[in-house]
Image 1 (cartoon, rainbow, N blue to C red):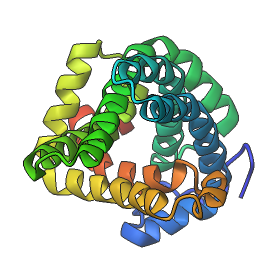
Image 2: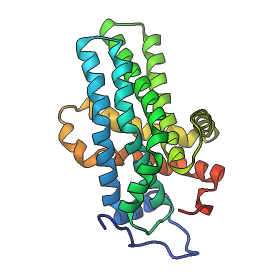
Image 3: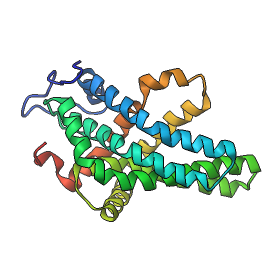
Length: 246
């Protein structure tokens, strides 16, 4: 494992790639530190969003949730995009300098990631606030189901949004449109990726605060890596990303 470089175990030209768990294990053995550092930086970038949402819940001010979520999303967006880029490069067996590629991806996408990050953070914070508030107020079950469905759809679309943003230069509206179309086009894979992300955060929240000491280690790489692996085939078929220069 290299901290900033990933030259080990790159498949030779013409050699078929491993699949499934074997492929996941291969990528972890080669690029774990790349995933870990990028995921840790993304987790740090998410802290203002998480803190703002918790604060809005604590003071019970619904108007604060979208505002603080928007501010937190502005900070988190570029880091989430750079994490997706690091994973995509590993999927394409890029053998170059990871740290240089990470910085280039961050600089390239920072402006484009601000709007999706801000709107996504505002929406996510509001959804979480409403979901927790519905539970406290004892709202009818259909309301809770609708709120949970909306939250899961937001998480599901994000599995496509950040990789697409890392790979393309699409404007905001076409970006959202393509993320939604890809989500529907390969629905089984989309739901599997969503299940991975949902299970991870479900376990963290269920065992919180006992799970808190594990967050710096598992951070955001653990749910994001298998989720991106699951949705990558559809992105590759749609955009032919492996035929483009890395």
